[in-house]
Image (cartoon, rainbow over all chains, first blue to last red; front, side, top):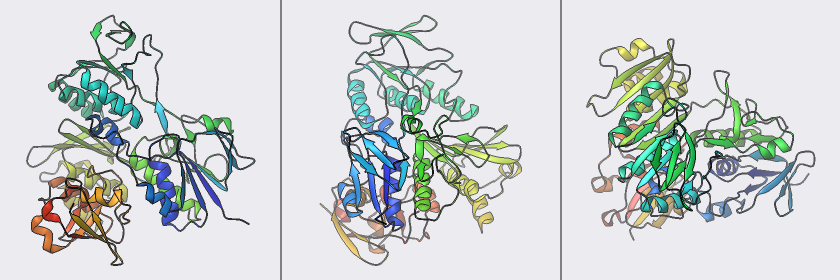
Length: 408
Length: 107
């Protein structure tokens, strides 16, 4: 038997972490990490936050080039995979080269959803997913006066915050009735909507874009209900689609993501999927896909452990963050299924947290400028420490004290 | 450029010249210093860039913010009085020669 080979398709947060963790765990084989972008793998969250302030077209690298060499990680950038051939246990690259594997990890991520809108092919109509998108967007933003964002999800709102804070007339249009329908509770969405409106953002809910008009470039947007809105920059932030095509064509099970079992293995033995593209079963039994750094890196570590023969079911409590204006939103857990939100204000009044319960069970804590609540929630949810609605409502409730007392 | 000395858990020191204004975390990551993970990229969300600052430099450091103070409670290795998140320490001339020790584990 020769040296085992692990091939990782996709070189962003998840893929890079699989490679790094394999080396941390003394994996004896070859590690090949295939990415289709030209840049060294980089941090994605800043693309919709600080990177929109144009200062660094290189982005913020996850690791320097020397890291991959030192760790004997065969990083192949600008190199797309055309096909997986599970029977032959090899992948075929775009240029025809084949690479054999013993273990394959799909970290193919997701791509911005494109909506078939007349006029969406104008040069000042953009999406935001990759470093190049962020650079283009920041250049356009510098020249823009009237910004229209389609989609009130996390990316749409983060971009709207940057645009509005920079003095642009900013309109956010969404087909649903509120912002962040997938990401936060009704109560938190309401707070964030007010926050944006206080900064001058105009929202149009239960609405959409019928067409984009202008001579050569977008000059205005016509909404579904016939309003005309001036626009010299349009961001389509209508969510993402998981990159499942390679897996589907190879005959792997796919259902809003690449279907994986408790150990993040796909329907084909020895082939795993992690990160944005992986549809896994959460602790509560639901199958879901999570688009976050935490999910990408924790799943990557889980798979690396499985590859070196130490499989453990994936069971990490999710967490997320977002920066909008001076509000730092920190989320621990998943909000869906809650039936009760209890608000706790920080002692100095500068922040608050929403404790979301399903019955008596804490499912999520959404914090605004309330890091203590977030940190405690990560411990409480991650370690299964009991916390009841009564606890939170007790005058003088201190989340960190609760966490320490119960953890001890 | 100020020199920052990164000492790993086994005691090996890696001196790095870090540009003014960069964080101590960025200096480590850009040069592939192991022992600082910085999973969240400097957003003070993950506590995987935890370091122990040599006490002789304590007075020269920026004051710890509440977010950092709280996030340190999530650090994988034990928190001490000289614990900091290296993403929150910007390099200044005064920090030339700074010694930071990295914990046994960041995850």
